[in-house]
Image (cartoon, rainbow, N blue to C red; front, side, top):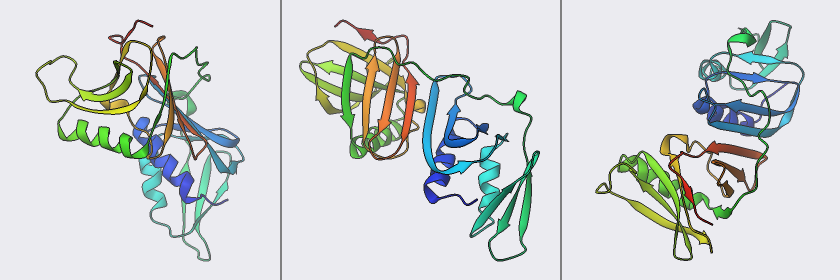
Amino acid sequence: MKLSDNTKEILKNFSEINPNLKITPGKEIKTISTMKNILATAGVEEEFPQDIAIYDLSEFLGMLSLFNKPTFTFDEKFMTINEEGTSTKSRYYFADESILTTPQKDVKMPATEVEFTLTQTDLTNIKKAASMLQLPDIAVKSVGNDIMMLAIDKKNDTSSKHKLKVGTTDKKFEFHFKTEHFKMLPGDYTVMISSKLISNFRHKNKTLQYWIALENTSKYEG
């Protein structure tokens, strides 16, 4: 088996959510953060033949970087990574699944009150602003009939702010996220937010989704 560049990109992204990863047989990869406030799923082109338990995904990806064209064969307790056309190889042993933090069930998304498109440009812009200004929170807020996304410090009214318009609405709300939870890959997303304090970010060009918990300071008036 080989891994596509797209799958490697997804694995790298998932390593930022949780260093643990359990891949189950099939063509979907899932991960969940240690605090269980971010769940991500991605469809991939490869079909994995068995359970693969990885304790340190960044370490595993580092091992892959030693190969130009890696191919994979699987045994019960380990995988062998071969350099295509050569005798170069590495053996990677699977972790004990009981010590991993892995998704136990899918999210059943409740009814959503707010929906908009978040473009790659706007996603990059808000994350960059939050990083540059060291703002720990991102808000999605109604301002009149506009849906605004803001990088803020919700505990400090006099801190710097950055905002941009992402849609329109006839409702009143202010939803809060932790900036550190915005770990999505670049791209355009359909965003759906529920007053039950859960959101869904669905990538428009990939079979990639993130479910991100909202902070309990969020408010929805309808």
